[in-house]
Figure (tube, rainbow, N blue to C red):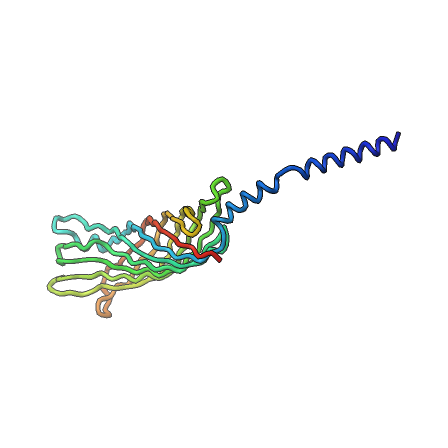
Length: 229
């Protein structure tokens, strides 16, 4: 009787192991893994981006009213580029440069007034790829760098001069990146830039009671080309 039970147990165990070995689980896993690797593989990238910045510029608006008594717009447009490294599906690092500018306006005190700025920064993105949409990368972005600002004044009390300054700045963003082809991706993100120039000078002399505060919400859109490693 014991021998019969022993052989029955062996037959059952052999049948279970045979059924488990015949299940095509590894095939489906490999297929999903390949799809995920298609969008999260390591690469070097080049990026072109455009953005808008809704800055504060409180002193500039208050001290430079338009002829009709209203305040000029403090919105910036920006063009930029970035290069970096996609480490894996979680992290990306990069170095970027942006040129920002406001619309040129005529105020009560100057026939022309426009602010130009440059932002040179290092970037770190951390995020994850959705299992249901392996081409979509969701991330948070931290950019840290330096902002240089120039307020170009034309015919201000009969003189032309620049008010300049610089400061450390950082930008916190959240966004999404979608891989549309093997080597191409598009990106959209929004966040807040912190960058206020407290010391503004003209020909080396401090302009009193005046700051250039570029802090504000920003929107950015970008196209990336990837060089697989």
